[in-house]
Length: 285
Length: 313
Image 1 (cartoon, each protein chain N blue to C red):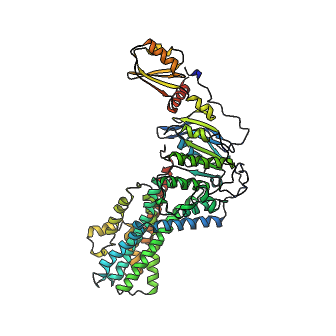
Image 2: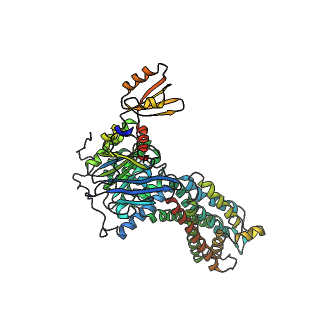
Image 3: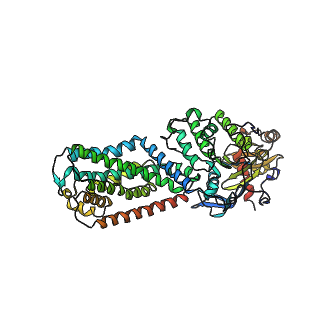
């Protein structure tokens, strides 16, 4: 009944009969070198995958740029907080940009891959589990950097923005480092939203948080009630750090903002971990 | 009534003389109030192809998920290569083809394979990996542009590209047409000929019959039979007669050749080993018998019968 195919098929000429010993502790897990190579490949393909989804790659880059052009460049040359508004808004739209790249980069992919079975396939493979999450964070950070650099280029080219090199470097590193709390938030969200409703849910957090944190309209123009709420919102604190980098901060303690962001990151990672554990006990047919 | 059916279910575990590549040892897995698996016991020996056969929702996928370390049992032990399935060294020796609703669509076939190959210490080469799935022609196509059959072949290649010793194939041919299914069977047979060990889940008796050395029949979370495909087929050799009749249940049960009878609303369902003699007798006794249907007893009936048999004290 069984036709044992003896042809070599696509396999190499002679394959040794599979070695059916039990695993032993002397058996090597992989070397650090091999592990690093997996992390790099995972990140590379995560990046390619998202680059080829225009709904992600174009919208996370062009929405912040478009808003910046409309509000920062077209609106004219006022000053806010002692600096040119075109420079000021690089800081706040920079936060808006890194938030979008991070939230959509982590949460929508995770929600879809988790909800539709692909994460199961990856977890069943010998992939180091962390590689999957690190790849999403690295990919998001690349897009965050791109948004920030493009905003800066626009400001310099069309907004007459002239920042000293030290301030420019500090602004870029603050914004890119500040994307990490929102990657953590995206991972947490990704574990609790469905694959189809993901974009809607992400926007439900993204857009109100952006407005109330003074990312679209300079903070000082916001109603008093909103300004009070803003103190409790992580994007507000990142925006203050970005503005401080270009000399337009509100002279609060620098460390306080970083502490808020660190605490927020830890809470989000804790929530993501709960989601990770909860998935183990889900009902599958 | 069931005495005439071959009794191949073995309540006692087999002697552990030879090596078990993978197995469940008294495993119970519940999801909330639902018992997906109930004291399930089976094992897979080196070079064997074992088919886990059962209807939808029987617990086949749960068994595979436990063997892959994607879920933990509530009781009992999951053994893969003598270790825990979550151990990375165990995972490096296993490959899995799972049912997945959506695979990232913007990556090319070659890119998906390149990534999965990198997880394993001694993978097949890229060209071998493409060849096992017959993917050479579509290596540069994006996953989203592939047909259903091509997608299945990519998932098959992803399971194989690490050249693992043990393969889990969860309903590998579901949704394929007859021709594609037969082509898949040929590929699976090649694996076994190469000395690989395979656990395959299916709800087609025909598929288990065509491929498996041994069949484990599972229903409602319990192993109801284990044996060769021939043993299992003999369970489903009978016929079911359905008719409207005035005859009493007791009278029908007393007829020779009747294995089981039950009343379902107005109709009578009679399980028999051979239809013709029972039909003659029924017609003779009740000239008003009507709405007669005779069908081959399918797997469902066999599962039902076996489950009831097990439930008896």
